[in-house]
Length: 151
Length: 373
Image (cartoon, rainbow over all chains, first blue to last red):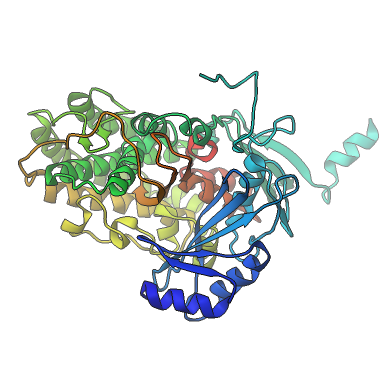
């Protein structure tokens, strides 16, 4: 499916989603509360069939934390980027998509480990790389006086 | 005392052992906590992070040409392809047109990388299953590729040959001759690999039907590369989204449907042949021209988001850059193929014997620094 058609279809799936045609992908900004529903719809709808989550990234935007999902359909070979933001930095929570795409299981653990975003309904949300004594190093306000050399 | 003995021999009780972090078959510092019932694997839980260096965090404070040198240290067997991914992304963001000569040389280098990586896979996979001869054969032939690199790039493994805008330096005058010699040599030795391992009855017993991964699960777990293609997942980035000179060569995507350990192995053997086909098409057709575009001394990407996918020897590597217009990225994410491949290990190994876990793990061809980043 080409980009304008895909964008229109996603607009019809979720009225609150903000669909933008990027240079490379169709980019969708979706409120955190609608993310799971839209993701499930994109996975299950016959015309979109996004079955391959090829990149899951956690981002610290400064005021907000965010998660970016790059998804592709192995059947139709079209891709979409889902972006969501959470404004609560102290207790950021998002619905897990690990039951839709299995690979999200590990990726969400990584995001939790490095950015501290909690995923509700995740089967096994533990830290992945670091132990409990660390903070969340990929946050922009993270300071570790012992281990990080600043210029 | 008596009770403890009873507990150990109690057949219904699960027995939990640590495989790694220092275990020869994990090929790095990977720790697998394996729950066993007798000899049967009930559950495998990977514990990772032993070589976590925080590459993504480090990249936020260094410039783009410097980042290239960190990507070497992720998947060190596909070092050249990792470099290429970052370069392609930077070039795409700056909208620079790269000379055809660079594209072709990059493709040749990438395919040499793939061949030497699969040679090492074959060597260590044979060794994991008890055939020590494979190790000597594989490393002997891999040395020939490393020698070609040494002559042109100066480095043997972490070659650092790419830079944004092209290549560090032009190819050595001997380069084409030596690559042709290598292809001629390897066409003769690759059938020896088959004679030694592929047709071996013990090898068949150890690998056929072991660790099946269905197509549906391969897609859902994001298993790419030869592992995914062994399950029938058409995921070759070189075909679907051609970069460099892959749109100018004809080659076929190696696809199987069985998805067991044996076919993951076969997929790599076939890929080596395909890589040699690609090399043969390109090696005599390197266009004349300059080997790099002149770049500004400080590279600043315009504000925005950029994503570049490439096919490394282990699957799909994605580089996702969020730039705020500065000389270093605001956020960079590496979608590493091994990370996704590892996540499917538990599913594959469940219900098989612990010796099969070694075979399955070997067939995934994991490189641990790429998982930890």
